[in-house]
Length: 336
Ligand code: SAM
Ligand code: SF4
Ligand code: SF4
Image (cartoon, rainbow, N blue to C red):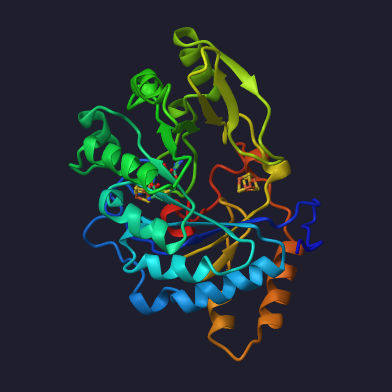
């Protein structure tokens, strides 16, 4: 059942990202830089996290309000113990499509169990095929080969199509664009390039570090000619490009140079149960307090409807000198 719930700009609530943990075994420079997320960093305590029962209850409520897709994310969602148990619960919610975004490091031994629990698709983040560049991006000594094994394991387990996300940061991994494109050309996996974004306030983002979607497409097109493809559905964030030789397609997410706020139908729930209506929101709405009170499902649905009904976020469209110093929550907290 699709509800008529829309925000102040007429955008329905369709997608939900749930962060299941704020922790991660990587320290990507664009997301959780080691200088900030070091030994002394205070991650959320276990009892601050929403339980699987609480997440399941929320999922049912969100579906009543029109949500069709849930993506589990984090932090690194696969570091949350027994995540399969949550997936098993969510898989019983009628009409709900369940996906997950992961850094792939634990996929080689987790993919089968995730699929058996009812997960349908995964997106794997991988920023280079070169171990040195990969390490410069994520600050851990983790072999690229193991992430590639994770991608294979996901495909074998039927978590398809596997999407591969590459964040491009100028001077760090822009010389890996073509290697990555060539590697995934002709495979069933879809590589998606993401413009480096100014999420959070710890990654020291500068516009000069952004390799634009236009630059990326032009670089790939010079090597392997591309043609534009229509979006699969309204509001698809990645612009689609097909190889003219039939070798599949790539996606390009122009979060910085081509904002798509007008069709943004996505809500986010942080690991401790705060509801955010934009990746760049200043403040969340505390759902955990309601879940742990006497509030009924109807009360919670009403609270969510009211938050969504008041939504008018369009940060990326407004990004400017005025927005640059606004405080923002971290991507690893809110769920990328
Ligand atoms: N740990 C998982 C992973 O890396 O796939 C899931 C969480 S991560 C925050 C979700 C996605 O956000 C990843 O694809 C990551 O590359 C992307 N991301 C993180 N920081 C970003 C930034 N500053 N700009 C663009 N994408 C970013
Ligand atoms: Fe961890 Fe994902 Fe953030 Fe990298 S992008 S630090 S893997 S949460
Ligand atoms: Fe959606 Fe906010 Fe991103 Fe715009 S900036 S696309 S409203 S999450």
